Image 1 (tube, rainbow, N blue to C red):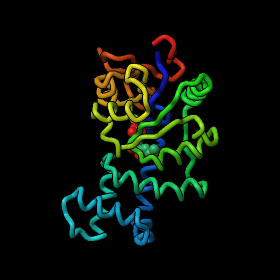
Image 2 (cartoon, protein in one colour; image 1 turned 120 degrees about the vertical axis):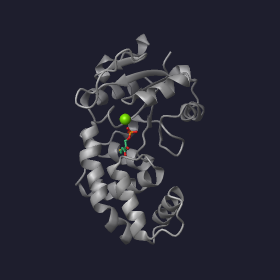
Image 3 (cartoon, rainbow, N blue to C red; image 1 turned 90 degrees about the vertical axis):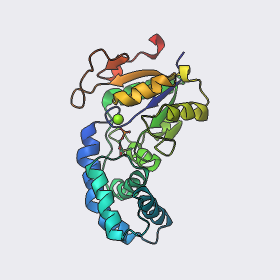
Length: 230
Ligand SMILES: CSCCC(=O)C(=O)COP(=O)(O)O
Ligand SMILES: [Mg+2]
């Protein structure tokens, strides 16, 4: 019996285009100014040090660090210090009204239905926990954070790594067989399934295609998910 849902964001609750065409360009354009204006912020200082560690170059200049961060955005690298920094940059965008999170209507309706029936809902995204909370604070349906019992990002591990799902199950206190994981990414689906989760792959028509002979269920919308039937 499913008692908890763990869901991805990009390509699952939210269109890929919102992340790639709105959030990423915003962080790219603001990166240099934000880092230079926030050099006294201990979080930014730690992020800069983490980037230097990641590239194995302890004497990298600030300019080099900024260029690396920007190149990671272009390459859609899911590297933790970049994701942490993007969360800080997007905060100003959401708070000023320049950014508004988007959640698909079917995802909103189904998440609300599950929440009302006592299913615990958790988020697992490569975006930082701060970025996740911001996106769901400022959506087309208002603040949706009341729906969620917890949030996970790459600090718990890579989304394509089975161990990340093992750790999340332990942390949220459910057996993997009681959890349904939702994502558009087939590698993430396979990793979660190998940890014993129930899984469904989202195939949003504008974002993805059905994979032939994929061994797990694939759906276009949350409307097609009936938890009681799994
Ligand atoms: C939390 S909003 C930003 C999403 C993001 O930065 C990202 O890389 C999306 O990855 P996901 O794991 O949600 O597919
Ligand atoms: Mg995704």
